[in-house]
Image (cartoon, rainbow, N blue to C red; front, side):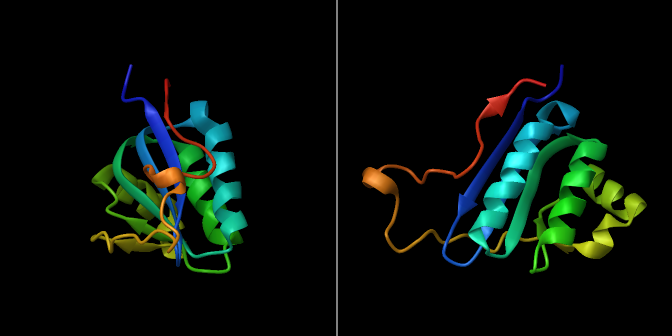
Length: 130
């Protein structure tokens, strides 16, 4: 058994960020669909933080292709590990995305987190066993 998958969608001032970690595969297809919907609802540019992805199959590639083809803004993939970069190159999906090596940081809304607590990711989240 590999690293459990985790997906979080965070909507900030100027963009939405989808944070992926663990094994991104068919077992979390529903979560990937929910993350896509949450990011699209924001109508903001989307970036994918892939720094902690340990494995990605065609489901993850399809997720990135779907985001890239449906977004009115160019989708950015942040800190992609070598395995993800390889898949993006081989499938040529990387031509549809901007690959960024540095994390530009992220600003939440001016109002701050709800109820004085930590920021609440929108959409999906939490580890899921794969």
